[in-house]
Length: 161
Picture (cartoon, rainbow, N blue to C red):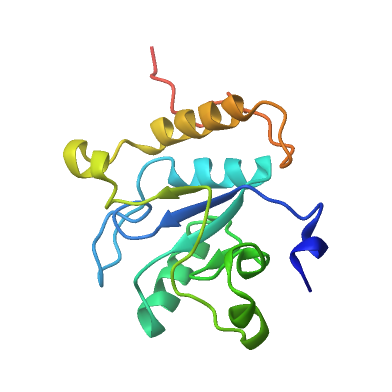
């Protein structure tokens, strides 16, 4: 398979860190889910965004995080693994020929608690992350990923009057 074989197999990739982004705990603990994380991640996947969960967890801890995501009905494509075309797009020929997969994942956006703004201001909340993602998609205009912004925020609980 070559880079040429990927024509038409393009997807917008979102890397999402698990600890302190989706799950309100730090490794190795498992805590509650951040509000709306499930609704937003599932919305993005339905929009056609490729969801790669990213974590420093390995072995049993990684499996426990994956089970936690499934129990919370968070739909993702991969855990600690590249989009199928990742190495073909961004790897060297030696990596492709010998399946030398890098642990560092590549994506169009990376949602991670180590982000500099996050360090200064704290978790922005999944409603805000969704607004930012829709803005990114809107700013792309017509795009090879066939993504269109989705401004439906009905997952946000409405106050009872």
